Image (cartoon, rainbow, N blue to C red; front, side):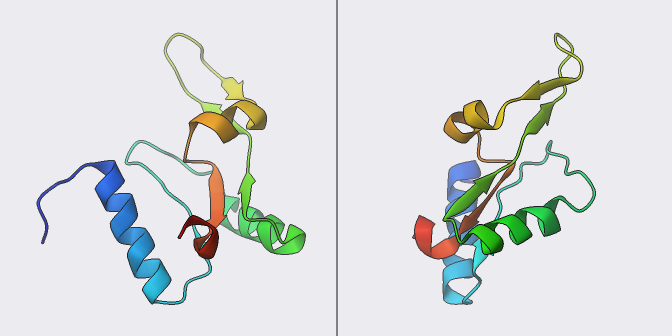
Length: 92
């Protein structure tokens, strides 16, 4: 058990475990994130098919101010961790 160090520490801890365990791909999700059905299989297919370091999907953002807003992948690539899948060796 560790003291809560925030999302950055939790993500680094998970990334360290993935690297030591020889896991190839990683996604970061927060407690308020939701995935569409088959999101992980579709993103992992794309990253392996394209042999890229990461893949970004369009992100659906639910908001009281903008219901149904869909963020473009270009904007999401610069601002959000969720909705992406990464190669562990790229991040380490």
